[in-house]
Length: 114
Length: 116
Image 1 (cartoon, helix red, strand yellow):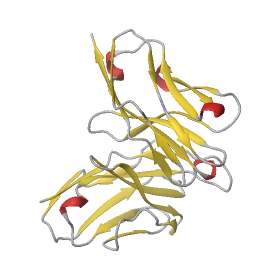
Image 2 (cartoon, rainbow over the protein chains, first blue to last red; image 1 turned 45 degrees about the vertical axis):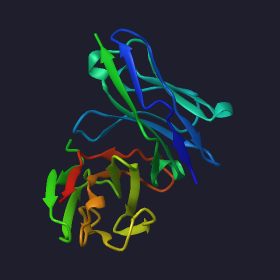
Image 3 (tube, rainbow over the protein chains, first blue to last red; image 1 turned 135 degrees about the vertical axis):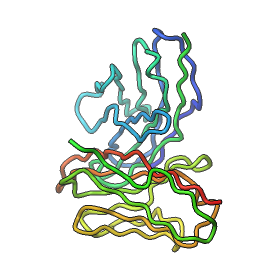
């Protein structure tokens, strides 16, 4: 069975600073990896996804993530955070091209300080 | 275009009552998913529909939980004899799965269920 670990429960960064959110997955076959963001009281919005090909994927809102098979990681990065990036971030692994259930990590809550 | 919609947005019920939660997927999306988000358990998969059939019901926590989908569109998640541990946000997602094509799940805003 697949699993996802997000080791950081809560991260605080200053506005304008760089950001990296960690995600490690466990899955025996080809992983289909996703990052979602959830603002308070909202549903989940897809930031980016990885299926194959280039291991550095670009997403919305200036986010990117790098897939490293050797480390079973899919870390999310942003060079300069904005106050509006404060939210909860979830990494997920999917099976069968992402067409079946997603298994989510426990999430990382991001706080931005001025 | 319209996204995934869910109703009601909030539901407060008494322990032992039955509740129905509704999901309207994005038009044309053949796959529909239910997840539950709670403080203690995080985001958990409940059930997945392809058309009107449910190939994977493995996440339903007990036989008090059931779901159906009609006309390849709207889905209803029913919880019978609700318990306090059923309190959570229930999220629905849909995707335009087609054969081996890659799918992306788009989520609705969720229904917050509170069982008193």
